Length: 251
Image (cartoon, rainbow, N blue to C red; front, side, top):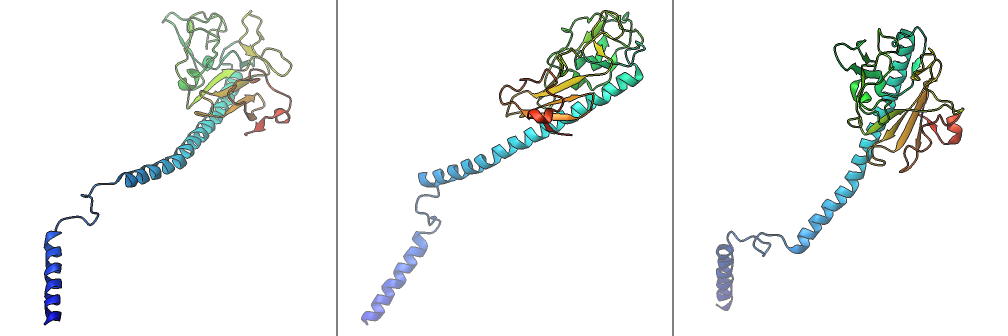
């Protein structure tokens, strides 16, 4: 009798639990998150971000540097075409050495004495951070069909880096002699009969790029990490063997 009563009470309790708790989550706190649970979620997100963001940054830097090396290769190709095709029509086999934007210039007016130059992509020309002109007419700059006397040629103004890199013509060779000379004797120093040098440097060090790259008429590209002083020692060709003074061969 006593056992039957106890069983009956247990059955009533089970029934009460089954109906009274219907729809109530087992967490016991209304279905929301506790502060500890939120802190755990935030910590997990922070860990994932700490792993993913540096990886994405390294990937972008690597991509930009590959693009910079490719652009320097394009400049070497443009120089070969310039020299072999006598783009400036001065009847001298020479290289353009004044700047990067000179590979893409346009006439200032329909009465200009030539048709402009388009030896490089305009985006590369606009990434020149040390162009020979100031955005105005560049007296004496070469233009097809006009020798080197066209005064109506317009140098593109710098607009933005190309894939995180700026470009410029190096100023002097290993001996300290200016690359930009006057081989045709017209008192305009824009070309060189046998040498040239160009560089690519990061727009923002350790953000858009790390290495500074250089190339000359030999066509071998060298790179070096200069830290925050990304343009240090890059305006002059560094050494007969750049690899001996910290530069590494990229190509």
